Length: 305
Image (cartoon, rainbow, N blue to C red):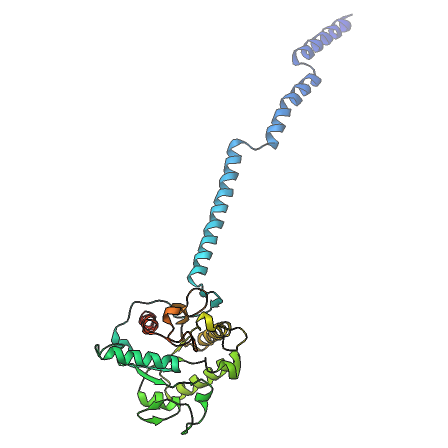
């Protein structure tokens, strides 16, 4: 009897404890209900997380833009000189205007185009003795880099130095010049073509340096023809002359010589010689007026090494 009473009380106590604690299924159901939003929040970005990600993307974008701008700036600083027919890969940049004395130890080698520059300089010196410093000239009509490589003779096309025909290398050495400006090529186009003319120029300059190894070499670009004389079917045309300049420029960069892009200051903007700079538009269309010579010399004064 006592055993039954004890069992009864134990069963009652057990039922009372179960009722107070609640069923496991109800607790689980409540947990799932509250967990669902948590799961949703876990798969979505919080405002702070979204902001951090956005800031990182903006930072990366700004860094990329900065790198791009720096690259463009670097590229712009090394951009070759451009013209209507393309780019000159290497040329002396503009500099502060030099004093007349800068040209005291300079000699200018060239054909009839440079011969006009010599005459213009002589004319200016009559009223201004210090004009263009003490620059000397070795010029001859019809001279090219090809025939300048021939042995001097009574019939050869070599400029006179002190009344004597000499090879250019010997004339330069005799002049004592340390800055050698050379503009040749127009008289070579028809005979040697662009590549042959460039090769002849290289040979000619190397010969000058053998006799005057401490000379600075300034290769002046060929200048264009006036538009009316720029005939594409002729070997001497502005397209070939510009190509010649491009290859001379590349040669100068390779050799450590200076390339002086005179073309850029006498070009009319369409790849032809400015009409006002041409003294013979109805003839050859290549020679300069005084205005053309003035522009040319001013370019030399402001493009020095």
